[in-house]
Image 1 (spheres, rainbow, N blue to C red):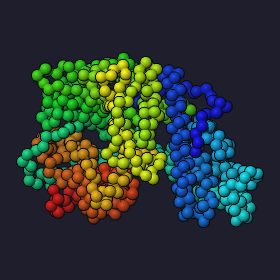
Image 2 (image 1 turned 180 degrees about the horizontal axis):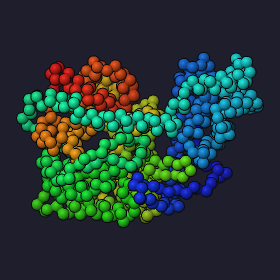
Image 3 (image 1 turned 90 degrees about the vertical axis):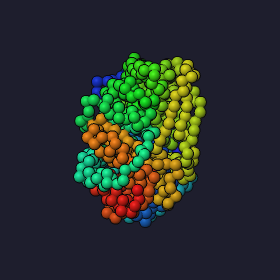
Image 4 (image 1 turned 30 degrees about the vertical axis):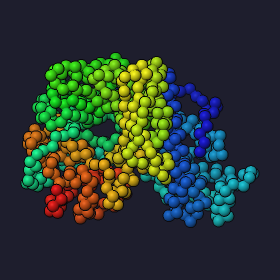
Length: 601
């Protein structure tokens, strides 16, 4: 589909844009230029999603879906694609913006279809208009016209054909059970219920029995020093990004004295990561850790950037991080902060409320505040933007379009020029969700600067999305995934250098869980001591088997459950699969017993 520029007739006055932070008390006002960027970003994103859906369906997906419901699948597939387009537009695009979204497609050969979609209020109206258009068409013969005329010949009359086509559409149940706001609300509620049950089962009876089995195994004489350890002050985030792996996050009864935990962790690693969602209200813990953990030299923290309400607020928070680094005794090893900020098409997604007002989940102007401020503290803070891979990562468009381009424009308005110094590809070829036929190279990492601060290197790193939590509701074609690596693993060809991360994360309530599986708990460090937790991590047959993606776990799983094929079918990669088969405490116990019985330690 061609995407020409918006026609002058469809230009309109922008509705007011109010950006509401995840913290209810924090609201920022955008400049007129930034409002225009948000408005344009919304249109571009929705147009791309619309175009992707049309291309996917016209390239065979619609005909394949119709085969089970109609002997006329070939003749119906083109028209039914645009029936889908009508329903997709009505479900996904606020009426205030539907005309603008379709304006990009009004100059091509499908322009009449765009007008037909806008003028139709329901499926039957569109089908009737489509049939009438081709009945009265006077131009060069068209394939779509021949298809409609053939269908009319096989029908008793036009109304009978309209009814038949509408009934066939209804049989597909594409929008009766999916894509609607109610569908997503019900889906998220169900996922939250499952997650709540999962956390309630942590250290329940099955887990306690499993840990007893691990404790009974011979101790490891020499325990490893950790490359990194995680610290979770709290689990929670007010945002509702649709790719997020969490819907429900448990309330935690935290220690009043995290310094005890800091002292234990300080002896085991030189690198810690503070994570758990939006830690804006817990930054004092981070500052204190920097000044209390002598042997740690890398203090990483993952934030969503929502704290950066203004330049002054941003300056205040980053200066406190830098000040904490400078307050460390001179006799201690030199340390720095790795400030990781979520930044992608999901965290910065533009959505529209029922009144037609646009809203960025986390405004790009906040990220600009951080990028503009970080170079001033180059000796203490390394900034890294953490990006979720999309179709843009398959070319330099990742910097010319999407959120990075919006960031560069905002920084330019402040007098800064962004310069990308280098890029690095993923170690594996991946599939572009908009063109998945052939694997291709993908830009994974990049280094860039603001030319005003040429010595302050800024980083961008990207990763795939696994279908945990809210992301379970996303379609496979919406994001880059690791399905090819999953197929490779299932074929017995391993996963190369890719492993399941079983380093430890310590919650402020004492739980010790795995980096890649926070549902797998090895006990409570405050109650049982660090030595017990370390021995369990070293000896645990299950987490060790997961670490190396041991596919014998799948055979053991099949012994007690019959849904493995269904789980594999919807898994987005090896991590997702191994996460999914270990979510139940009884299954974790069974897998651990079978590994021990089989001598797989």
